[in-house]
Length: 229
Image (tube, rainbow, N blue to C red; front, side):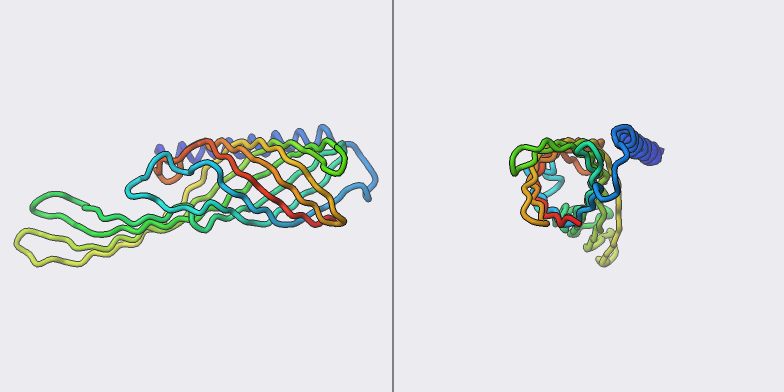
């Protein structure tokens, strides 16, 4: 029931976030000739500045600090634009630890568990530019969804009093979504049809995925290379 409630709350956050961005874009946009609209696509590389976990879940977890993925941006009137990214982290969590399923002296299982998870972050941003010389500074607000998915592999031995040891092996797949608002600030440097976009991005996640103790505040340094069409 708790899981269903969290899922429902998460869906409400997504719907509200998308609705707010849609209303802002629709309100501020004014009709302009078609040639003034621009479409840009490219790649974003994000470096994680903050730690993902508040402290190790079991043993010291290993995580990638770099996210990579495609990005598209649609230019709107009044120096506005809408950007959508898909940032992939190959190793959101990787840890191996020895554990006991039961410490009952009559029956217990001892073994090693391997947890490996990856993640996708899907931010949607409404950006506003302030033209200053060759560097066009911008700020942005938006909403992001994050999916964390992976597998848990347990391999060990079960001991039952009076019986010979028995090997045990299980594999479990898990997936979870969480959501949060975004605030960003950066600059755009233009060189021909290329756009270089260094920025800092802050996300406040609504909860910790899959029961792991993670920080809700996330800060990333991002560099984007976009191609203007």
